[in-house]
Length: 181
Image 1: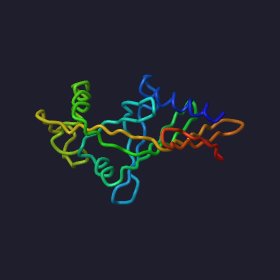
Image 2: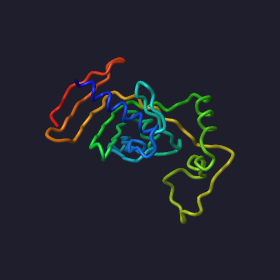
Image 3: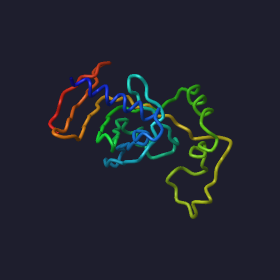
């Protein structure tokens, strides 16, 4: 019975990249760096593998990269308002260094979307006017992050009873248990 909930969460995560407008396309990512306080931001889910590896893109100069360099453990919050489904994902982040994968992915990004990775100054830098961001064409700061989930918590808000389950990955197997909601 519990694995039907795992199948549902897996399907919904995959739908985040295949269905236009799916609420799991934009997800909340938390990192913790030297400051020991969680830093949250919304990221775009770009890829999901069969084994639920999550992939996002970022500028290599961002705070999230600095945090991940110090502590590669991250968490994500995904929420589907129509289905009243919340997923909390914990995992280990790998900064992709495969130059072929980086190059191929970069070539497949729409030219107007590449602006996010070619600003002259790093994201979060102070500027006087948002209309005067400088871009560089000679190089980019494109980075790919792969997140290998180790835990996924499922919470479905429904009547008469909410359903909460925790799935933990050991080796290559997911084990599940129900939790009090």
